[in-house]
Length: 166
Image (tube, rainbow, N blue to C red; front, side, top):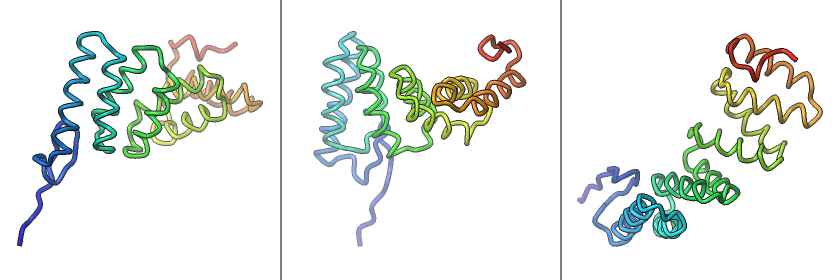
C-alpha cells in the first residue's frame, strides 16, 4: 500500500511535487517572479497567470499576480484575482482589505462596505476598515452606521485625523 505525503512547495500544496504539472507551475511562477524583479509587470502577470492556470490553488502565484497587476495600475484586474484568492483562502485579511479599498476607489460602495464588514467582524478595530466602512456607509445613506464607525475610530485612534470630529 502506497501512502501519499502532503507537503508545501513555495505556497503550493501538492501530493507529489515531482508531477509534471507541478513542475510546470513552479517554473512559470519562478519566471514570473524574475520578471517582477526585472520590473516587467506585464510579463510577470502573464507568467503568473500561466502558473495559476496549471495549478489553480497556487497561493503564492495569486499573491504575486496581485502585486504585478497593482504595480501596472490594473486595479480592477487585481480585484478579480483577489476575489479568486479569497475563495481559496478566506482568512487572507490583507487581501480582503486591498479588495475593499479598490472597490471603494471604484465607487462600488455596496461591495466595498461588504468587504469592510467582513474585516471588522474579525478585527473590529482595524483603522483602515473602520475608515473605509464609514465612507461607504455614509455614501450609501447609512449615516448612523458611518458615525458609529468614526466614533469607534476616534476612541481607538485619537491621533488619527481621519477620525477627528467634524
